[in-house]
Image 1 (cartoon, helix red, strand yellow):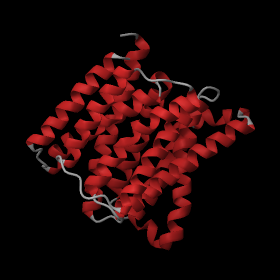
Image 2 (image 1 turned 60 degrees about the horizontal axis):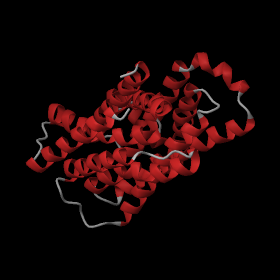
Image 3 (image 1 turned 180 degrees about the horizontal axis):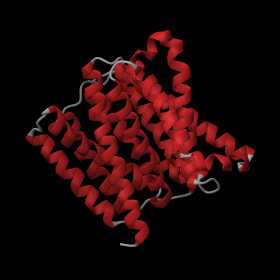
Length: 288
């Protein structure tokens, strides 16, 4: 495996690992009693500060960004924020099982979008391995049974398509803008929009999570930030399809951390799903 491919693999594993742990820590925070919107608001404030500190050396390059590049970066940030907020609305009117699986449909939307926006066609073998991982994710997340579709499911599918768009669109922007600047706008602008939007719904009540469950707010902010950095650097190296498909392994890491931190046990069907994710992920890596 070439050096760049090894780096890409490290980023792929990193984004799945950090996001898998993020899901479990978020659940722990909600179990602690944090309000979901307040949680998102407080986490977004921390993310903005982390972004400004981490990318401080890159901010001087913002003055060199062309108008059309700035337009695309703003679109990326708005789509990201919209996806986060729609996901919250969808999760509130559907089951956790349905939401957990449907959000993993993102690779299906990446295929046509990558062809339209980037003129990229994925090998049939990679598409086959994607379906193996998708089937494994279905079994692992749902234990083999989805609840009857609800209105919220449509919102979750919209989120999956929005995430696919932002991953493909980010790759397009990276042709002329540095990866770090793209990550900065993706993370910081989406967080800023959420910080502006949530108080409109909740008022000053939304800042309560800053003083309650601060540990969960800080930890989820850090994990989210690291997962996005790894994800977008992987997109730069191996493209949105491989990155988004490998991201399915995040459900495997979530299951592992749920067992370690929450004591949740997998059924035999879920173990089959985990094996499917590992099998598909292994062959997908060999394609890099």
